[in-house]
Image (cartoon, rainbow, N blue to C red):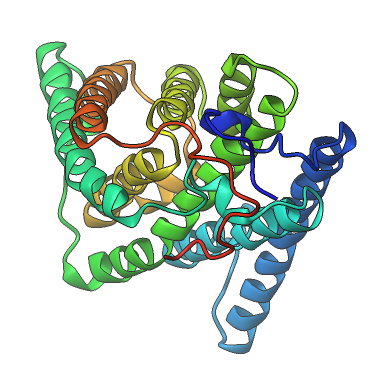
Length: 311
């Protein structure tokens, strides 16, 4: 059963079948599924590595001995939660999973592909801004330097990144923007509690400290706001994918993939890059929404939305 006509993205879960308990039970099911999937993927990754004779964890710490293997397990554990969110929307809320994607009840592929080059441009300018601010503030060159590790070490990390990041980034958007926004939207007319709590949950999923917390929270909050303003998750997914591909790709190229997985502290200068990236992307995407007449509310009421999210 689809939502009523003319409602924004965050209100799509309030269908005629909505009951107060559905978003509550659904949220608990999504949270439990996230934990279970993470444990299963970790167990399978460790088992496969053991059968292949590959050391998984460092003998002196709980960190992954091989950063590429750690990257693959980490990304896969998040990516495989995507079917959980889809399934809970269908089984618990009795609505087509495509309503998590956009107000049209499906993922708008052309719009997503249009947002990708915009995200790439914004991401590159953000990286340039970080380098510029690091240089102007006289930061330690060791924190901002770049050392090429060679193709043999770079390609495995790049391959894992390109294969898994699109699914990992999409899964996080469906979790913290899609599900959280619409769970709150089933009760509240304002999207801001969902935006802010979704950003807080997104931040808690990461292990950044000090300035990194502000950086990740700002990213999550803007993604939630853009989901409302663009009527779907396509723009947030595009920026999230490009952001992670650039970050992990550069880390693989410089031999600092282990540090990227460890996360932790980041310099305050990184906020300059985030500010440039998010501002440019938001302004450009909102301009495209107006120019392309992208739908931001649900269309005329229909008995059901198409169940496919791939059309």
